[in-house]
Image (tube, rainbow, N blue to C red):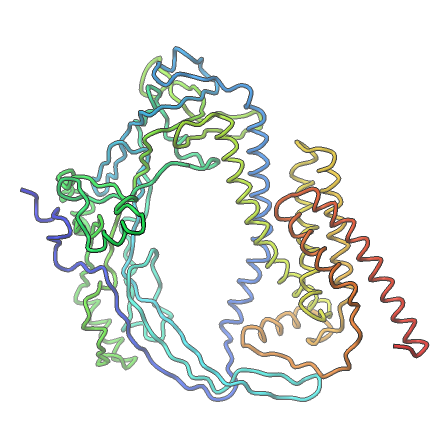
Length: 571
């Protein structure tokens, strides 16, 4: 018979609930202008961190991508092909870079804290979820106006602030200390066994031993299938009422899961997690559960806090619905278990077998740690190409993240210098110019004209010059700032008004004739330059340089002509 603590979801222990609940908190009326002084400081800190960290992230991703491509180019002609059915010592010498593929992938991964062990797995991930309250703040305000002329502005006033709270399973803990009602919605911060990964120490692909350092290589993308684990009777998926609907739409029920016999969990009731934190297996999709049991002193302190904040007798319908208790913890597992795999690594002495070889990390002449493991039968160049493609996606994402950073930077810089942009198009143009100039500078510093053609080298320089020209043109078309003469105080005023929703209302001015022939040119320049920055396309970069020169000439001609016409009285 199966121990009670190991019974699957159909006979789960009482006390576990996978659901949550909703409660309503206090409602406040704030008369007059709504100000949020704490949010101003938080916004200032977040803005500073965003402006500093985003360029740093871009530089690091560019450096990693560069080092990866240089390493692949260095070793692509020196990879030794081995038969996975042969001993590694028979086909390679120590220190050589080896590639092999096999449909026999073995190994086991174990979580010693819970006593969970899974066979035919290269890696085991432990996912931890916490039952926690979350506070939601809803604010509904009216719009008021004050001042006149240049000082006329609109702001939020006469606000109604309502707090609601939702309780459910979260992937991280939430501190309830700053909640509006922290005692009634207290979140215990217990985390005895955080999320972790456990790599197989006896992994083999064919006859070749694979060291954990290849599976955990931070420089490579671990590209193998991952299945969520569930322990049931007979290692079979229990039928669900929605299975016919799932099959009707062409999906296989349970395709992303792996089912193990619940008998394999025998002994986990004596594990460290079970003895120290009362974890037990409840099923419901493969969960281990630990209930939160507060002591008497904590309960009395919480009741006293509820009395002080006026929520002690605030009973609601949500309190009667079945849900988890704040502080409960549940744990689930996922296994990386490919049926076929290919690996590229260095033939290195096996740490536990005298005279034997295993596959470990290969260090290039520049110190790059190379070791790649992919699912399926893959040639070395295919694995390198996929790694490079994933690296390029990361670089493109970092470059895309740099655009909103550039938007905030040019706005803050303009306010600091006492200038302002006429509309969003000029500001976007300046942001693209700053981003392009920075990316081109990083290219030149990181790549140093390596591994590229003459056209690509010229494109790097042209992109930087074109982007700098764009930024200068956009700045030359700025006007006087509405915040003052410039300085850090004006930057702080801008952040304050932005956080509090204050908008300045410009005076109605006579509309000037727009240089309509510049609009399509600026839009095409914007598009081509953005593509060149994001995807490193030399043709787009070269075109943007030519378009920039044309745009600068047209802008200068138009500005000069407009000034001359105004002097002689023409429009």
